Amino acid sequence: MGSRTLSDARILAVDDEPANVDLLEGLLEDEGYAGFCGTTDPREVAELCKSFSPDLILLDLHMPHLDGFAVLEQVTNDKAEDEYLPVLVLTADVSPDVKQRALAGGAKDFVTKPLDATEVLLRIRNLLETRFLHLQQSAARKEAEAAERRAEFLAEASRVLGTSFDYQTTLSQLARLAVPELADYCMVDLLEDKDVYVQVGVAHVDAAKEALIREAVPATGSRHHPLSPVFRSGKSLLVPKVSEDLIYRMFGTPELQQLAVQLDPRSAMVVPLQLSGRLIGGITLVCSESHRCYGP
Image (cartoon, rainbow, N blue to C red; front, side, top):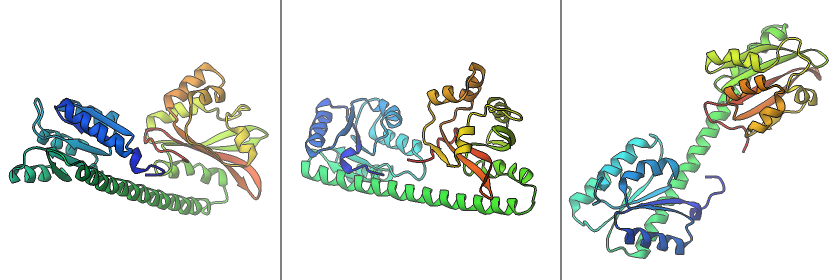
């Protein structure tokens, strides 16, 4: 959840009566909730779930075109298997069968109309607290899994580097080790002479794009490697978001810029390689297709 609070929650209200949507908006606004979206057309819910990304859905059951049960089924089928997206049903239908059907269909709670403001707000708060707890646990689990993958990578990298005194050959294997666990594509470049680098390793989750990398990133004999200043600094560089402006500044010609854009770099990490305190090259890790991000 990061620094998000309950007041930042995104709440989607679905009711074919505009007055009901307006009532909920006013109720939530008075309570301090900032993110509200309402619709009187249940056919819009699927698209709103994508564009608005709600933390909670307030749903009427009896609506034209698409009733609440159909919306519940749609939401359940569209969300990720491990995602907790609570739906609070608000309806005037108090029959036990309807309540049981809604809860069995994926609703997390049920309130009957006419609404009691205090009850509605308490149930909304309870569901949002559970939603945010799930988000925190999911983020912690993903971070633990990422840390485990990094540890496995470092262990395997150490094993590979320890198998031969020919570091140029063994370093070329690092690119394959890094993809896809740490990056969507990876380049390993070694220093041959002052500012002259040779590319000894390339790997991409899409093997067909490895040729693009070799074209976009200068290889043997180049005196204009776009990352050579970072390698020389001896300090790792983290780029949480790679902008087009950065691509255009790093790659001097329109041809190279176009190739780099095709590779769609979104986040990057550059790590200088040193041996006994001497610069020998660098590893460039890039996230693209997976939408992962290095850093905050």
